[in-house]
Image (cartoon, rainbow, N blue to C red; front, side):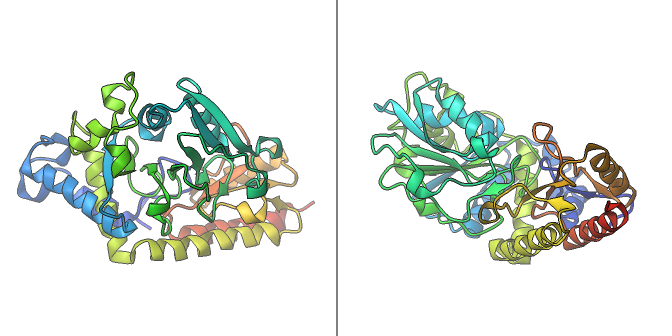
Amino acid sequence: MADGRVYNFSAGPSVMPLEVLESIQKEMINYKGAGMSVMEMSHRSKEFVQIATEAEKDLRDILDIPGEYKVGFVQGGATLQFAAIPLNMLGTKTKADYLITGQWGEKAHKEAAKYCTSQTVANSKSTKFTTIPKKADWKLDPEAAYVHYCMNETVNGVEFNYTPDVGDVPLVADMSSDFVSKPIDVRKHAVIYAGVQKNLGPSGMCVNIIRDDIASGKGELKICPTYCSWKTLVEADSMYNTPACFTIYAMGEYLKYTKKVGGVTHWAEQSDKKSGMIYDIIDGSNGFYSGPVEKSARSRMNVPFTILGDDEALTKKFLEEAKKVKLFQLAGHRSVGGCRASLYNGMPMAGVEALGNFMKSFSDENRK
């Protein structure tokens, strides 16, 4: 680990691979002899256009994105897309379906209600978002304009390990927190969107993968703001206005690194190992640690856990002592409390091992 750096388990913005940060650092002041930093460059310059073009090509290669899908880079994070989805997809329809398995799915559902009848296919809130409702219990509407789900719920630690089958209705996925951590079947989706600040770079941008027929604007409502229009986005090659240039560049460097280490297959293997290591410690702790999420729905990215039935004093002690061994940002989301370890692509195996060793020694010393 580089001097002075800690193991950062933040849910986002989150840890990036050291090698990626170092390549950005090296070019920070003078990008490839251009005499200026990327953050000073015109987004219309040949240097920056090449950066953006390469980033899109590498993303397409890594995720095997078919030619009949457009890729857009848009500011506003995934949250702006909560509104953009109904504004671009409703067309003449008035209803949309939402699978709610956590706080982000819930927020997307609430935002859509401003523009249409936002329907609930299933909602696991009664379980405190600790499970994914069984398909037999879903209430899908064949007349819905689309079905939306969040593949990984960052706050609650719930992840789909399959692609929902919703028949002929277009499927929309928020993949913000497990994007580029495993292979995905793009063709099963009409739209995929993902904030990049978990597995791909700094905050400030969302990647949209949009099927051609939807990118054509056929479902766009008249009230859709120009900046939310996917048709405008893709026709302008994500440069209708000045894009998040530095974020695109940093993402491009992360994508190059991803190719170098073996693509999404590599990240999927690492994610399984890292999350498996922490879940094994939780499950083998004889109740000292407990994970609230049903095993079949456990996230590989965000591992929430409590200590001795959510003992507040002990949790505080855990978080303070963790910092002494360079383990930071382990507090759970303010809405759920407890602890949470986010194990994104950028978290090295050594960091997860250090956390595992600390969890074991802490439970040995504090078991009542």
